[in-house]
Amino acid sequence: MASRVIPVETFDLVIFGGTGDLAQRKILPGLYRRFCAGQMPRDARIIGASRSQFDDAGYQEFVREAVLKYVNKNKIDTDNLDAFINQLRYIAIDARGENGWKDLAKLVRSDAITAYYFSVGPGLFGDIAERLHKYKIADEDARIVVEKPFGRDLETAQALNAVLAKNFNEEQIYRIDHYLGKETVQNLMAVRFGNILFEPLWNAQYVDHIQITVAETVGVGGRGGYYDKSGAMRDMIQNHLMQLLCLIAMEPPSHFDPNAVRDEKLKVIRALDPIQPENIVRGQYSADGDEKSYIEDSENPDTITESFVALKAQISNWRWSGTPFYLRTGKRLRARMSEIVVVFKDPPHSIFDVQENRRPNELVIRLQPDEGIVMRVTIKEPGPGGMRLMDVPLDMSFAETLGEDSADIPDAYERLIMDVIRGNQTLFMRGDEVEAAWRWTDPIIEAWQEKGSRPAQYDTGGSGPEDALMLLHREGRRWREIKA
Ligand code: NAP
Image 1: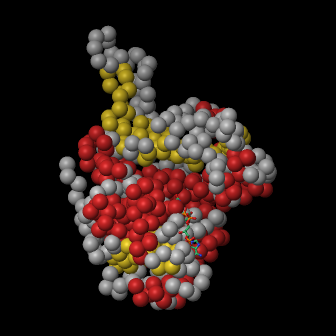
Image 2 (image 1 turned 90 degrees about the vertical axis):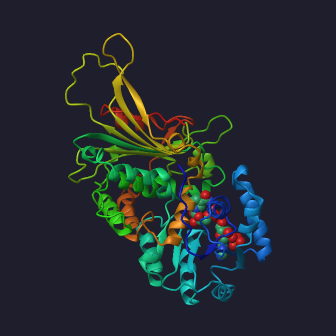
Image 3 (image 1 turned 135 degrees about the horizontal axis):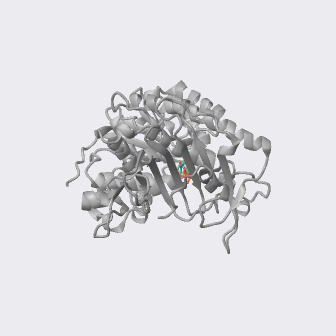
């Protein structure tokens, strides 16, 4: 099955923070892959912008190194790399100063699509937006791409939205959540809304509960100071896990159109009940051999910041009333994996005597590793011996279905950047969505701070604190195992 690549129109993409970690690891390698796939026109330009002093040739070599380091060796083609590098420019600019901005104004073309990627610390988002406007660099067709974190609470998110809104229309603002750029996340929408099969069952009558897990094996060593001001609730739940929850729970939009989709997601967030303290568990990882504990990594002996959260959310609407959504995320867990599991109810009556090995139907949507979708169904165990039931996966993994083409599936950043150039905001968060999400998480964080109590300790390489398991066990349910 050959994948179709539709080239985008020519563009100038300015990357503020073009020398930073994200640019080197994700944005520039991603653009190189799109170039190789034939999606990036030969006259499109990528303009790095940050304080470091480079000329064009120096930046081109810097980017060459990054591509060689972060792109799979067998995807490197020297001719393509030379041609890609040739499309790079650089401007030394200080987001908080006045140098460089006039040069940037001269460099960007008025007859190309222009996009400005804010790949800098969040403290600079407002400065850059204001200067792009002040120096008349960005016209009303220009797009800006804003990285996470988008605020640290409702108040700061509102302030940031206000600064951006002073200089840009909402249609120009692309708030990035790279989870939304994953192939499987879009496939989830295709599976839900492109088939008659699932939608009739997609409600509290047939769905027992839903689990969303984003597990990491790494701790916060090296950036503990930064993380300690954030924590799992702000860093993961408020954005990535809530976005996944919205896509699972939303009503079918009337069109696959940015505002129609985002309207439906917003309704889900607004229908979330406030979380009761007994329905949320916090944790901090403990030391393990040479591996430091969270408290040591954060270098703050009094820290009450959580490196793990598990919670039970309820959506009060007709579709979902009575079906719990269990969310969990944490660091230093058994495996690196992200998945959504829709666990269906048992059939109302069993005609079979033998029940062993029978499990409820599950739809497992795996985001990493091995993106794919698996439906678990019950069948008869083959062979003689009467009617024995067993549970088998119907595998819709991309690697199986798409064969070699699955290796060419763009990663989240590649896809999202191309969406910016195409002017498609469907997979980006709207300002009101981000604010609604903070409105839901703020009281939870405030309650923790008021109480001042320590999160529970949990072992490295496990699945979080005991209480997180109890969140489901006490209701006769169990988490799916965390495994790669
Ligand atoms: P980083 O490695 O610290 O890079 C920061 C970039 O900003 C550098 O290119 C730096 O270049 C530039 N910069 C700093 N101060 C500047 C100023 N006053 N004017 C102009 N440029 C300035 O950070 P990062 O990890 O790439 O993260 C960038 C953004 O992406 C952050 O908002 C982060 O939260 C977000 N993010 C990062 C990741 C990731 O994996 N790294 C993942 C998700 C989100 P100079 O020093 O040359 O100026």
